[in-house]
Structures are given as C-alpha cells and as structure tokens.
Image (tube, rainbow, N blue to C red; front, top):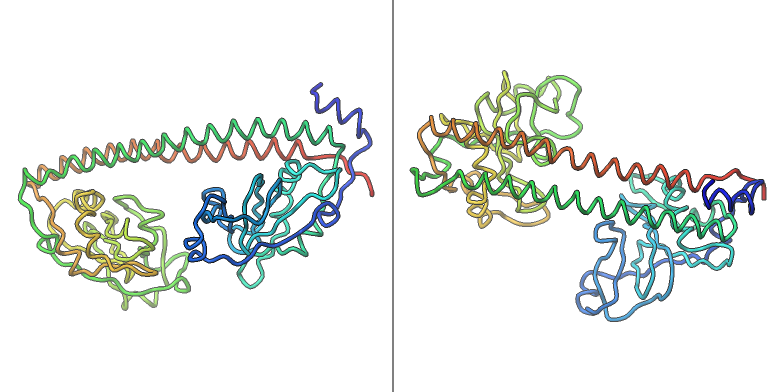
Length: 393
C-alpha cells in the first residue's frame, strides 16, 4: 500500500467533501496593461496575460501588484480556463483572474492541480468567444481532503511534472535538431556557383488563384488547395487534396495542373511566405487567391524544395509587404533567382531530398506523438490521484 493510500485510509476512509472555490478563495481580476505600458515601464517583475506560451508571461515591468502564492486563470479567448500556479512578485492583466486561498484547509498547489481538471469543464463558448468569468469560477467545486493527503498528492504530482517537463524538453530539442539538420542538407544542394542562375519568372508563368471561402467547403466536389494548408498540412509534394469546394464554383476557379508548383503568397508572418507545393495528382486542383501557380518545364519537386531553401527566402523577405497579413506579389516572387542544373541533375537532387524528407518527417511526426503521449500519461495519473469517493457536505 502506498503512503497516499495509507493516508486516505487513515484520514478520510468514508470519502472527501467538495467545496466551492468562492468559499475557499478570494477572487480578483487583473488590470488593463497594454504592450506600450509594459514597454514604457520595463523592469524585472513579470506580467501574466491570457497566452499560454512562455508560461503566460507578456512582459516585465518595474512594479508588481501581487506577492506570494496564488493561482491565475485565463478568463477570455482560446485559452480560457487554463490555470497557472504563481509564486513570487508579479502582476496580471485584465484577461486573467486571480485566486488567493483564504482557507487554511486548502493548499494552493493542490488547488492548482485540482482546478487544472475542473476549470476547463466550466468554460462557456457562447458568441464564439470562450469565457470563464469570476462568478462561474466561484461556483466550481473541488474535493478538499485533509492537508496531509493534499501534501502527498502535491509531492507525487510535482515529481511527475518535473519528469514529464524534462522529457518534453529533450524531445523538443531533438525535434528542433532534426528540422535544422533537414534544412542544412536542403540548402547544401542549391549551390549557386555550379549552375546557371535565372529569375523564377523565367521558368514559366506565375498566375494568381481565385478566391473561395470556408462557407464554400464541401465533403466532395472541386478539389482545391487553400493557402493555409500549405503551412499546416502539406509538405513539399502532394498527390491528393485535403479539401473540396462546391461543384458550381468549378468554372470560376483557376487551376494548377499535375506537375505545376503552387506557391503561397500570404500569411501571418514573413517567415514562411513563398513556400511551394509540387502538385502530383491526376487532375487539376483549384488554387486559392492567396497562392500562385507556377507552370514550367523543370522537375516540379526540385523547384518545390528550392522554395524551402534559405537562399530563396533570404531573397524574397525584402519584398514581403508586412501588416496584419503579410503578402508578396507575383512580380516580386518572379524576381527570386534559382539555380537551374540539367534536368537529370534536378531529378537526382529531388530524389535524394525526397528520401531525406521522408526519413526526417518520420522522426518529426513521431516526436510530437511521443510528447502528446507523455502529456496524456501525466493527465491520467493526475486525474486518478485527484479522484475521491465523495461525501455530502
């Protein structure tokens, strides 16, 4: 029998009562702090916001609003219901709620683990904006076992959290190393001193696609490629599409034929704009208006790999128009210089890179799955540890 089992058998054999957060904690909200305010008051104390990246830290200022041991939670947006454990001196923005345990029967760290399970269940998605407001948080109930039981649970989960965090960091480092290795080998093949160098536009024609929207999507119909899919779904080559649009739109669209390269011309940043997809399917595909179709007589995969090289992206980034949505024109894309070896050499390079891409993708796809598996394992044990036979209050 584990130490935790012994404590439960000794201290709460009949079960554990649930209590409301409003009875356990003082509930507050943060204050409005713009990025300009943070920049103008730079300092050493963290400001936490609704984001989950970087542990929710938005920036650092020279003062702090809170000191001690607290929980914060995201009240609005895609991450609503996410709970964080905070200790030290810090401030929070208005899209963060704050919990200060006012009862001597609850440990803040234990409450963190309990609310990490319960809080997401109470998020409301009304009007398309997820929310978990203070009045709802106050009504959430959690099991409150005796303090020695809480302490043992925290001890176990802290240790397991450290293990999972360390493992995830190692896997992320491995993932990044594989991506850098792939990029290194890809760049090495585009030697600009060996071959004739010509503007991309000289290879053929660059044609912009036609607009279609989410409401046009269907389960079947006209096969299409949306610009966002070049970032999130496709690699350098595809034989089948992910999406279709309504059949009645067929005569209004512009198409990429088999062997063409589809180049994305818009995105949320200037880093990935210009990546290409070699289309190898058996039929033409409709192309979104944030993409261009390159018709040419070269090896399609050789071109698509080139469109992922550093040599190419270092050229086009100066022509990207930046704003809320970054974009590049067909004329600017056409200025990018590309080395063009004989077609036999293009075929050889494309075949080598295809094999390396496949090997790298197997590793890259496997690592996130391993990270997710470790996270699920952690959540499984956390949920089991925090499951109690309930007694009526």
